[in-house]
Image: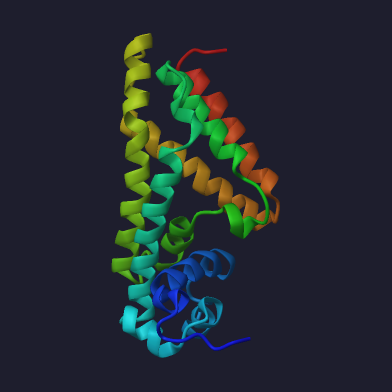
Length: 206
């Protein structure tokens, strides 16, 4: 294999490759078990390049969480669940979409920021806060459709669009934990089936 020069496009994109490596390796191994050497090897960069872009592994963790938020925002913005004209149909289509993308190996469909948050919530506040920005930022994108569905159907109760949006993420993240514990993606899909039933019950849809 030929040696890349400093002028090569690949070498110039070292930061992106490190973020992509972090995305994949942390989901597979966890943050604590992922070393700087692992990241450099997967990204095909030197340690010098790593520390040129990130002051520490924790700084990489913050950047990886922000990178996840940016790339998944684009992914979900383009997803087909936004198409139905009825807001409740869009909420249910979101749940169906989340179930449909539970494919492949567990590390391929689980959530980077969910994995990170479980590990670092008390030890590394700056990474936890980056995870919170990602999770709650995505949660907020569901609130308008939920509120519109409540209004359309005259649904009252002691819950809010914000709280139901958060609950969707609790079910999704919990499903990922079950899939990991049972080594079975079907457990995560099962959780989404129950979420669909729960939302239909709230909105009196059979």
